[in-house]
Length: 350
Image (cartoon, rainbow, N blue to C red; front, side, top):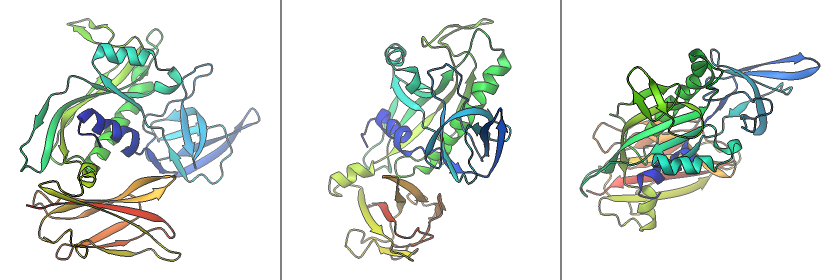
């Protein structure tokens, strides 16, 4: 991960953020001799229906197959696609398009990006103020962040309630999921004590006058959105530690890849036996990834122990882990058979 804050967040939105889930229920029905399926989930995030004739793609992936969204219902987190799916299992909402810059530069990029690619999108507003910590601190720096989660709207024909029902409700769901997954990305950030500010912008603009609302748009596109602002504490990047052969002054990084055989769902890994982690009493954090669909996806997170608050782990996707703090032996269970896993561990040396 690049040390710049913008690249830390770019990597998060393009690679770490995972808007997937399991199908809770489904209902197949027919209209005008066409089959449709309504799929019920825990969270449809920022899904919106495809508008006939629009170049903006409103897609969802059901069992890894791409579908246009026919309609959505935020009240029960359901969406409709044109297909007969009797055994739908999983769904995925595409990650938002991410870009950053000053308002002028960002507007140029947005104007030159095809509509089919840019909605919905996340804009990181510059200039970003950072506080850099001394070398003995557990954190590298903290940055004052203003993120805008935005999507298109119909300014000429919509009333206020439509700004909310069509755009803002979904973007608020997305914003809360962003917060949730930023907090779980403990290898890069530390957000346990962070508060957040959320502001709805029905008619998103730049200049505000009393009693008049927005009088000048920030972008040439007509947009509604949610502003998410907070202080982002950023840790020493694990990838940087790895590339420097674990020679960071205050940290040691270790990566281990392993595979399960047919019938094997448990695994023990000793992180002291190779001589890297000799001080077992020092705090550490870990992340477990599963190789799936050509990429590593996080399935388990170890809670940050640097702060002296104790050690624990949180199950993200089936697999879970127990760690012996005296020996640093990791015992994984609930693994998937015949699957490749990767576990990253970072530990303080002082």
